[in-house]
Amino acid sequence: MVTFIRDQLRRYIRTGKGRCPFPVTLIVDSQSVKAASTVGRDSRGYDAGKKINGRKRHLVVDTLGPPVMITVTAGDVRDEIIARDLLWRLRLTHPQITQIWANSAYARDLLPAWTAEHLWMSMRPVQCPRGARGFVVLPRRWKVERSNDWIMNARRSCRDYERLPQHAEAHLNWAFITLMTRRLTRKGPRVNWTKQPPLQ
Image (cartoon, rainbow, N blue to C red; front, side, top):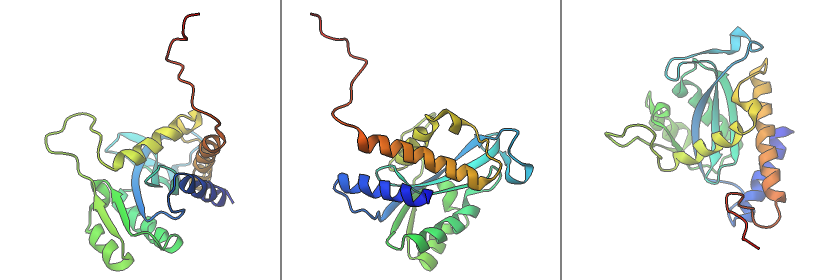
């Protein structure tokens, strides 16, 4: 039921922007977050790349930012391992998808070739430019990074407190539902609070 509400709101947002309600291009990325003491040992792990002991959120969004699929795993699960199951479920639930943008971690183990051969989808990794240092805004991938920042505005999403990964997925879906409903019900232009009011 939660995913149904989320998908309906995403379609309203897409049609309101003049887009097709069913996206054909997606962006996928993962985010590691620390786990609280309520998270069991069987569903948590240590992400050596991010140096975080907790869980990993695999977020698939369309080109506007709303989520299409959310999967939560232990932090030690590699991206290319969960990507096969993730992409297979995407093919079953969204058969119109033709192209997916991802980071280089999802492109290991010949995953783009497997995706093209078995799922008839094109996976294109977005590489960091050579010689880049520090934070760099990458084409297309910045949209899924922005979606991760959106849910981090909900303070409870900064850490994983849920006992089961399925509960964590439901919580993230509700965070996106709250975000999308606020945007759909917003009336008039946004107020810019940084500007000084005119002198009387």
